[in-house]
Image (cartoon, rainbow, N blue to C red; front, side, top):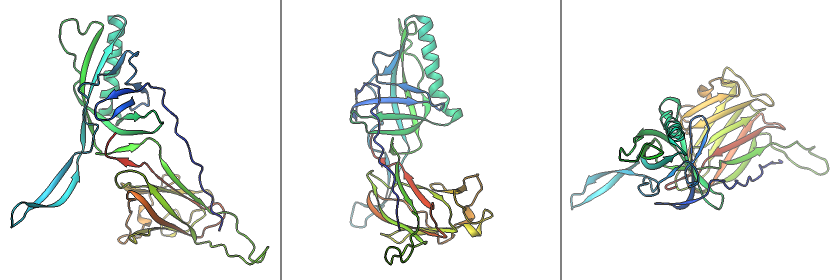
Length: 317
């Protein structure tokens, strides 16, 4: 059966100039507040920038180790749990005069603290080669001036602590695998051939990150049921559209399956999670490296498609 794949997208190199940051070396840092406004953090010609001395929390994720005593001495590792992290971020703010400085100080304070009301911001780390990583952050504490002589007039600095729910950094660029059913062919023209209406495609997914990722799947109809299988361990899950109030996916209709948290929504927002084959369903993750997976659609026809999307995750920035 014809399989159509997605084009490769080359990331753009950011315009923010790089600076040397402890734990990660030369990089361009940008803070993106909950409104989407981008605040460059390594442009020394701007009215605010990161003070490299004192930055921490950009390295490997913190872990909590659970151990059991060993009767012959020492202990044995039983469980490893990655923990949320805190990033310490010193920032200098200045202005041409006191009015300009005050405006910049208030604006940047609002950009950080609004994460507590409007959702997380993002700290982005971009490399000169165009690659980049990011992590979701919430303001925790620290937006206070030094309180020393001469500060608070045209310049001041704050040492901000940012709370991160997730222990890992994720790639700025999502990785996508696209498989689409092409037009069927006549069995006898120009020679005997077979085109399956069930198995959309077997493919190898390459996770270039350091840890497992939990992908999102988008299925485009027509389809009546969809089965996703991870071949290395046999884990799979099936979404039976005929068992939901929505019914079979028609041509052009979509359904999105999130594996973390487990969630299934139609293109119009209908909750379709009960259509999964519980309790056998395992909404599996993709480990680092190459993993063979299979997408099988019942009722597939020309236009049926599956899109797998994930952001590789990394220990460090």
